[in-house]
Length: 196
Image (cartoon, rainbow, N blue to C red; front, side, top):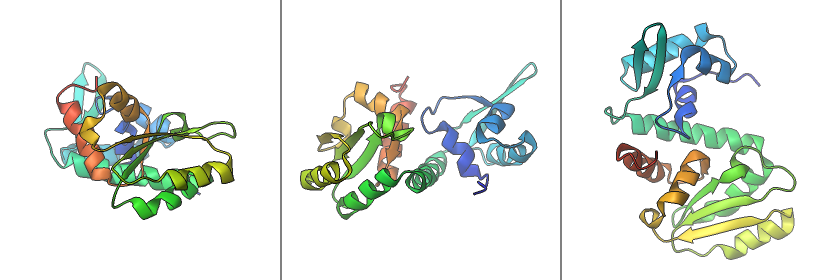
């Protein structure tokens, strides 16, 4: 399958670190595309004020522009595209997503830790649940059927999440639902320099 490069694919590179700066060639290498293919997208994102172009001597870096509040819309779409990609690649996460989807209006579900990168045979799944609904039965069923251990952390409100765990989740996560609320929470903390 040929992966099409979009503005959101480029923005997705910043999802685990909003302060990250990239060179054009670095972005091209990470996306496995020629820099000539990436450059028009970068220029458009810069023109739209989503990325900031930083020039010093012969070095040009690009980073997110949080002064432009449209950045949140770009981050949300990039998160959703990343989720869809991950669900296509990983059958276990897709099944877990389907099992939990009945509770998306009541709880927020975020996968974090090593399962985000690669869910191997012996690995477990770290799951943050935000909300009051108890889904222990669905998680237990999943664990028994697929022989995958789920480490569940449940809190009532995203703002009650401690900063240490927030940083861990921010650095490696897959947001199953209510993406906007989570991205805005991360963005708010980032703008207050609390995710450093």
